[in-house]
Image 1 (cartoon, rainbow, N blue to C red):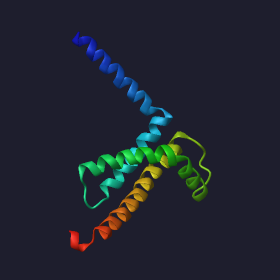
Image 2: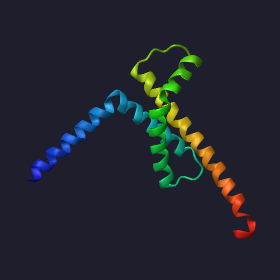
Image 3: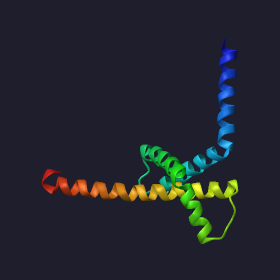
Image 4: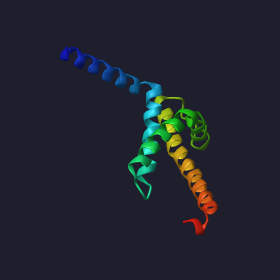
Length: 121
């Protein structure tokens, strides 16, 4: 019984590694690292913020990497559509997506503090 559990774990781990080596997996991993990198550059590093930064980087990479790829191609040169260029664009999208998210959160927190007012602190 326990041998079968380890076989299933090895199978699922192998499938996850294979998926991460594919094009979609590489985009999401690169975006997650972009979010992680952005979190590492922040002044206050809380664990929850890091988790949300990685998740935000994943979401940003999935949705914004085609736009980041166009920006990279227009600003540098036509680098082709290879997997390394796509992963680089996903990293940039994850990094930029988390930067924009951080700006939006700062604006919301400032507005909430202004609504709360100094008398209610």
